[in-house]
Image (cartoon, rainbow, N blue to C red; front, side):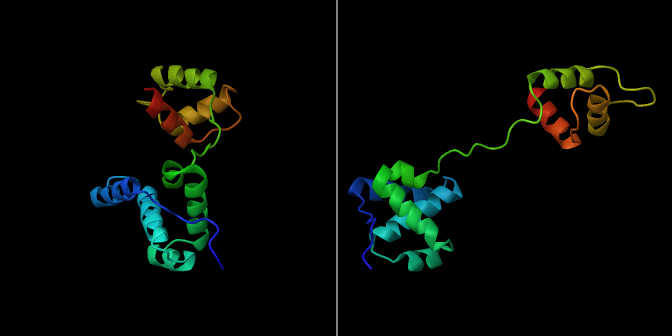
Length: 142
């Protein structure tokens, strides 16, 4: 079966990929895609390339397609992933920060993450929140 997406690198692209691999300072996924493109240009099958790089053959196929359709930058780098929605909005974060800066409850020397999470629920700022969410929010805010 003839390959639908053939990788043809220019001399400049090939040199750039080899330099990137030599330095090794790019993210691992980018380096894997660079190795994949170099091997694909040499004419290796998707299965052979995948086995040699310890990746799935579908990854080889997708990377080839992205190179042909979108060029080298598109093949090396994945699109940004959206991630989840924030657990606390700006107003809720402000309440959390104000609470963390206030005096701790009677009998405690300082606020703990769990105490802050529980207090946010008691004050009906949120329905539920974990101590880890409180920690991450305070870490980025304070």
